[in-house]
Amino acid sequence: MIYHEKEIQKANNIISELSKETQKSQYRLKYHFMAPTGWINDPNGLVFYKGEYHIFYQHDPYSPEWGPMHWGHAKSRDLVNWDHLPIALAPSEEYDYGTVNDHGCFSGSAIVNNDHLYLFYTGHSIEKDPVQVQCVATSQDGVNFKKYEGNPIINDFPKDGTKDFRDPKVWKYEEFFYMIVGSKKEGIGKALLYQSKDLYEWKYVGVVAESDGTQGDMWECPDLFSLDNKDVLIISPMYGTKNEKPFYTIGNMSYKTKQFTQGLVNTLDYGSDFYAPQTFVDDKNRRIMIAWMDMWFSHRPSQKEGWAGAMTFPRELKVIDNKLYQVPVDEIETLRENLKDFQSFQYENEYMIDPQLSVSSEIHIVYDIAQSTSNEFGLFVRSSEDGHERTKIIIDIMKQEVLVDRNLSGTGEKSVSRAPVSFVNGRLELRILLDTTSIELFINGGEQVITKRIFPNLNSNLCKLFASAGKMKIEDLKVWSIKKVID
Ligand code: FRU
Image (tube, rainbow, N blue to C red; front, side, top):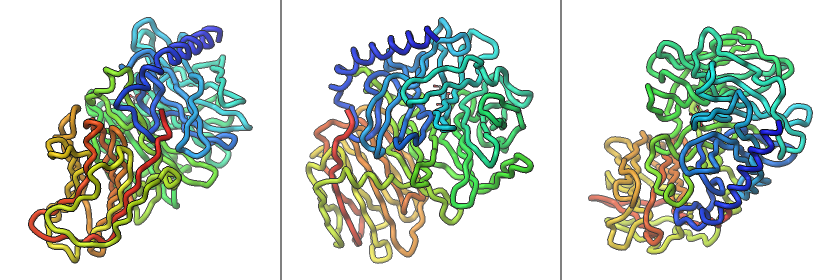
């Protein structure tokens, strides 16, 4: 334990030393959560505890590259203003520490029981056997965490898994606690289920769900929950060493047979910078999801400026007509200012929304497709005046697709992300969240989402509509700037 406190102190010191410089980075976002400095990946331990939201995250405070994993920590009363807290977990014990880089406190989840906050995580070190084990740490004040002396609470993988055995997500159902852990065996990604009465002693139950052979050979960060009378499983899959877009399936969880039966399967977010989402429920009974707004092997220009990685804006989930919908939590409205309300109008070719739109802004557009004649239309955002740099959102009526094209979005990767779209009642609704280095596009009330990081020049802020060969009828268009709340 002494080691844990020492390692936490060391990490906190380096954060206060490095964060001032990091904060000057041109790439820092204005309302998306980031670490004060260093590297972040998955959100961990999302929880509402004693009236406050807590976010933990995979973090290397020492470097802008992935390294020994700590759990960074922050809390909030409203999901938009975050206070950074001391590091919650640092690698320190034989089960989560190693001498080579590849070790630490890997991803996991949180649960509140008897007023205490419990963090479940995977202890990882490639120098030991088994490499990955499940551990717990607890806190009474939501700030200082003590690793359990009896760790690891699950000290080996079961017969249905292999040494890739990580990312425990814990919840309560009736009188038992359950934990699912991501794993793999013989090329099949699996979610393994455990059961406990006291959160310390866990009994292996079996494979609760697995890949049908096409859904990844390793399942990371499984999340299983019920919402709107349906059961939802979210998986971040790997194919070989490649991570792919997380998917969800709406099916049926039987606590009698301890089996989840998959139903419809869908991509959770069609963008290239969305991974390891995690959900939790708050005091308003909302199911909220936050994901890492980045991806393994993405190009990260901000690393030159001492940091990498951010979180998506928190999204509320709903099941509608057997599909999972995602919308930014309502709290975003508290950050809106300078509304420009264009209401309804028609345009041809191009229509200027703003030559100098704020780098952080929100755009709502409702297209009346039935009364329009263009088959390819959309918007340029974060565009330079000459249009040489720009991010393009394209709606292709014939292909029934929405595209986000970042081939000209500045430094960073060049790619196009596509999502299928349907035009319900001859309408299409887009909601776009722009921040210094990100775009999140919510299509038709969040039925589809595309999340991407972009790295344009800070002065590229022109925003205009375009329509090829035809007229467009806009039913409604509103634009806000979004206040800066994060450093
Ligand atoms: C997902 C993941 C997890 C693991 C963590 C390590 O992005 O690979 O499976 O616990 O990141 O940082």
